[in-house]
Image 1 (cartoon, rainbow, N blue to C red):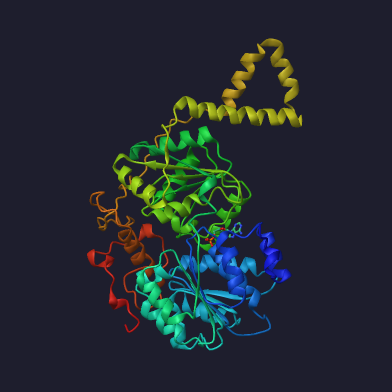
Image 2: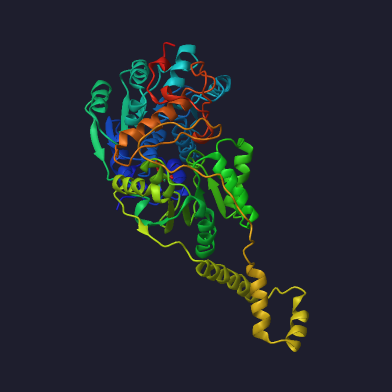
Length: 518
Ligand code: AMP
């Protein structure tokens, strides 16, 4: 078995890797790092969750001479979320080496980015549209770049970034090291590789090596209206250490977090509308266990790197299988076991089959937890808490009262009453959440209600993954070409999928009106 020491990396790089808790290289890292350290071009077929980010980031960081004051590494990503995620991982991996990196993406104030560029980053992680903006403004120069990474290249091409990528790469010196990562290898990826890579090595791994095996994946069939009740019963029955609950929209997340709080759970919500400060506060509470249940949208949870998540609950089924894999990958980390539960409404069963087919994993069907099971779970927790006080012998002022009561009453009755009080009867609060439409495979847009989200309709017959990709493509393209890009007149870049305004039928089409020339 290989360790990170075997690659001959600098000590300060290995130290950062070790502190991140990576004990051994993942298969894609084992294959990629030696090739990349020799600066040989490579094509890596690997998906999210395999450790591909560290696979290209580690050799890149290792290679950089920090005394240099110029951009030497360029990473292209399809979306701002991925740019941020990659940038966060690079920051962690290079903390002892002092490599400077900067994410550059649409939807963020360009003046701010220009200011940050004055810090002379070594690595730029950017989405193609915004990067070209900077190149045109001459705020980014690529003449010193010696390493290029194309991350999720198939996604970038699906989003119509081929020309942008070609323009960018033509500005990077030919004498360079290029790595291309892609989950799939369609012909346009091969074309891109032929054009820009030199005798590349091919490496590939079977997807989802890190996350899947340790995660027990269950689903419960519930009607939309039963979901909240099902959720509280599940939380009571399973009593998770730390749980992440996924809701489809921001409104859903807000409503759910509030409803859970009302019912006495230590819950909070996370979505793209929160300020960085609010987000940090929620994350801190989650990390230090002052909240046990985090309700989040996909986008908000994407950069999330918390260990110890015992449960992931898909309160709403995600639209695409990749999001499903990403969501459940929040648990079962670092060799620990995790459980993922998905709520599936009767009309979403076909969608569940679709997810199972693409992820090549069958979920276990479970019955809705009964009231008795939920109560049993809660009682167990109460008893555990009670016994931990007995163990610690910290009774405070209560011992005298206990002795007094025991002289007058039966001990079993007294203890049962105490347990009842501590466990708390479920408040008969009527919680009404705004219902969500079921997810389906074929796409159409929503009914025009503000705060709604793009919905899908049509029969389950159309199980084509590129339809889902199409949706993501439009959405992510919007993000990249967001707010201040001067190209996007109606969309609010960088926000969660959930609260985007209705867009009419043309929104889903790939529009060349968004091309660079506009
Ligand atoms: P990625 O495929 O790059 O999205 O990585 C998936 C997750 O695996 C990230 O949270 C990484 O921090 C984590 N990871 C990457 N490499 C390793 C490793 N060698 N051991 C454990 N976790 C890792």
